[in-house]
Image 1 (spheres, protein in one colour):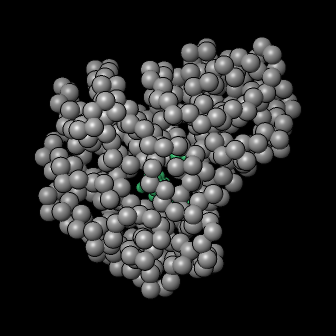
Image 2 (cartoon, rainbow, N blue to C red):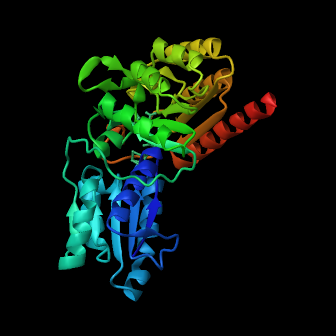
Length: 374
Ligand code: SAH
Ligand code: SF4
Ligand code: F3S
């Protein structure tokens, strides 16, 4: 029996697909790159922007013919799209060839739902919200010498444009002991040279058993594990990154000299309306500190252009901030309205052609910065 997993979205989803693979291999399936040959296809979806959802829907729609040719093929849709109640129900109704629709909170129930399909020929839709962290999930790591390690799930920040808190639930940190054990196992296996810690906001990590034990403590403890490996992490919210963490990046040889620090906008008015809880000045102070303590640090960021109410002046503030920081890499996105978020209802939505112009402008500035650095 063969499985094929199609992953959309962020590293969190890439890692979750490794856990889906682990569960499927435990059931006796083996990986294949061919959707035609697969006995089960799992789509791990992303809901961050409309484009991501459309891509997933297009891919899923294309399976209709394949299912007709082989009615025994199981088709499952998981991930952030399916955690939205209305989207999950719509998927289940409009695509009768989908056998399993499963939300992010229920992923570990996938083997049960597969068995239900195999034994009783029953379709399932499951996306109840749960506040539980499941440990010891079998994992088939697929990112070469890098091993992803989740340190927390969910998000409490409610940036006004973002759907993640709605589809991933409230922030929950894993126990420090569980994280350290996983890291030790990874290093002792001898297969990996790098660990990347994952969370929507790693800097707000707190051990659930000890409120004094924070992200900096976790980083130093992981660095103490014997072995030759690099350590890095994502994502850092500028409002939470501490001086201790900056010092560790500078002092710990194992921590890579790189940081992804999403700024989203350079305009204080827009940052406030995005509910980001820092100002342009505060952000630039952090960058200053980072650059003085870690001279060759590789800084990358995310930018959203065309957030509701973004004027030409606000956009100029973003451009000037980018030029001041001189990032080593930028992910620039056109604002996409997400249902249920605060920004969805905001006035002064920006027309698509202006968003398009602005996103290209950001990429142009970025190219110029890279050329100047050469
Ligand atoms: N937790 C991370 C980011 C998760 S989403 C953080 O806070 O930095 C990754 C990126 O997608 C965000 O940084 C943002 O730039 C972008 N993004 C999120 N929601 C978006 C939306 N509605 N439209 C466009 N881009 C969005
Ligand atoms: Fe979304 Fe903001 Fe949470 Fe990042 S911190 S996942 S952008 S709500
Ligand atoms: Fe997408 Fe979910 Fe990640 S919405 S960006 S896959 S947390």
